[in-house]
Length: 190
Image 1 (cartoon, helix red, strand yellow):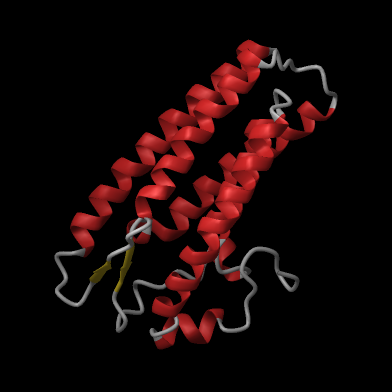
Image 2 (cartoon, one colour):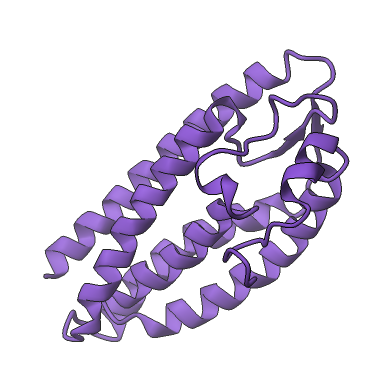
């Protein structure tokens, strides 16, 4: 079963690299419009460190602490992981050229606001997927120390990222009218 986990681990790395490539392409395209702004995030490097070190941490915990896929709940986390893959695909196809890891925004453009797919229900489905991925990738092999540490660190970074992002996004009247009454992660709840 650990071979299956290592396959998931490698798939995750491949998909993150692919997403970064898509993000870079979209950023280049969006910045051709002079009204599109790229917002500087002094702490962006923390996302890179967090996501990279998370994947390394899970492997280290498995190897050093001899974690194994013995927990029956591991199957539940495999299902959650594959739900995350579906959601991530849905997010990318909904956002299309708006998908980006950087904070870019055109405050006048209705095109820069996505209101379809899962964005019909919540403001930040991509961050929800990241939260669930950290939990599921950690818990498939019972790497619960990595899960706790990186869930907390991710929560701290997301707190500041979302605060900054929403202060920017709510300047667009199209974004504000659609998302003003939508919750961040769970429809009608949170």
